[in-house]
Amino acid sequence: MEAQLLNAQGKEVGKVELQEKVFGLKPSKSFLHEYVTVYLNNQRAYSANTKTRTEVSGGGRKPWKQKHTGRARAGSNRSPLWRHGGIAHGPKAGRVLLSIPRQKAKAALAQALAARYQAGGVLFVDAFSVEQPKTKAVAEILKKLGCDGRTIVVLDQPDAKLAQASRNIPNVEVLLAGDLNAYTVLRSRKLVMTRSALEKLGARWN
View 1 (spheres, helix red, strand yellow):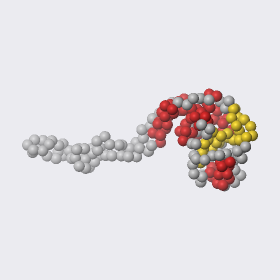
View 2 (view 1 turned 120 degrees about the vertical axis):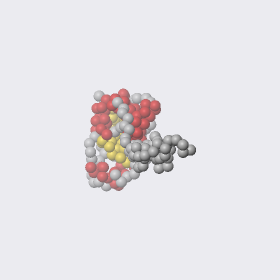
View 3 (view 1 turned 180 degrees about the vertical axis):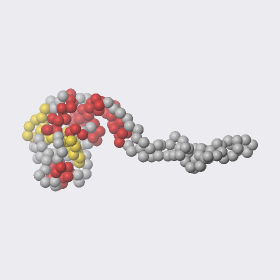
View 4 (view 1 turned 135 degrees about the horizontal axis):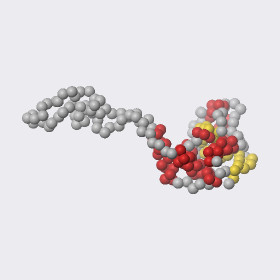
């Protein structure tokens, strides 16, 4: 299968060959949902923390004797039943990482690329660079390409000038082909990929 290859002015300059086993897939919503759930879980900080009865101050001795007081039995004022006592089943700090097999992550990326391409959200360009790190230059290129909303520019190697020029544009991110994952693809509205980045990305499925 083929797709249009554009230049920085948004004009067609040729064609690029796309892998049928990637861009021709039929995406599975349930499969992509599974990947996104795992990915977002692993991004959480898990900073909420409560103290259990072993961590709050107090305790040490029995508040009153076991019998003949007319009150309920109590063994410690650190009990969750008491005011200022410990918290039962409260959140504890510490990351709870979920794992997903590498092959499933790769399959999720392929399905995400297919979903975004079939929705008309993937553009292929022969090159994407600027001579000077000027935000205006990047904004003009994206405007000519028809990119509005959250846009990801995918490169095959780092470009310091482009990264500096694009960092002040809201909802625009520059990523390397090797750093692309299913969540970032699905979260974007437009994916602008250079020809060399497409070749590097396609090597994953060769």
